[in-house]
Image (cartoon, rainbow, N blue to C red; front, side):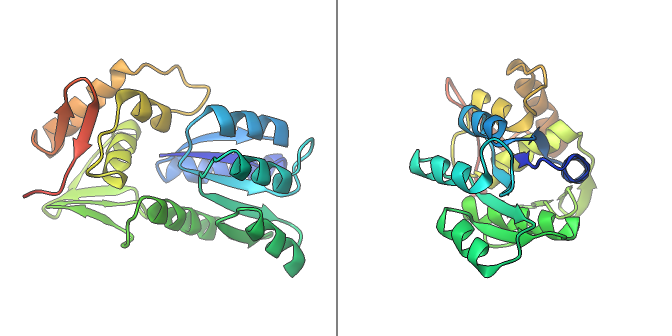
Length: 220
C-alpha cells in the first residue's frame, strides 16, 4: 500500500514518512502543491495526507482540482487552521477526513487505516481470508494462528491483494502500489514476491490469471 504525504514542514513530513514506513507503507513526500499535484496525477496512491497550507498551490485548491478531474484517492487533510470554517471548506472540497495540528502520529495512522479500509470495502480492522489474517494496525500476518514473517515488500504485496480480494490485480498495478516514487521499480520482482508468499502461505492462496495478473479469493 502506498501513501503520499504532502506537507511543507520538513520535520513533520519526515516524522510521518518514518511512521508510515514502519507501519508497512511505501511513502512519497511532496513539499509544495505543484509537486503534490504532479505525483497525485501520475502515481497510484491508496491514500493522501494533505496539508492545506502548502506553498505554490494550497491544499484546498489542489484537492478541488483532483476531485474535479475524477481522482478519488482518499484524502486526510491536515491543517494548523483551527476554525470550523476551514474544516467545512476542506470536507466540502472533497476531503475524506480532517485533523487539526498538533496531533498524535498514531491517530493519523489509525485514520489512514480507516480510510483505506472503507475505500476497499472492508468493515473490520483486520482482514481475514480463510485461516489467513492480516492486521494493518500491527503490520503482522498470521496463518491458522501462527505468525508469518514477511519482508516489507512481501507484506505490501499481500496487503494490496487482500484489500482488493476477489479482483484481478495486474503486475503493473502491484508495482505502482508497493514502491515509492524514487525506487528502481521492476515489475518482474512482483513475481518473486508472489512466489515467496506462496511458499510461506500455501500455493493455492494467490491465483495467477494468465495474461492478466493475480487474485486472492475467499476459500470455497
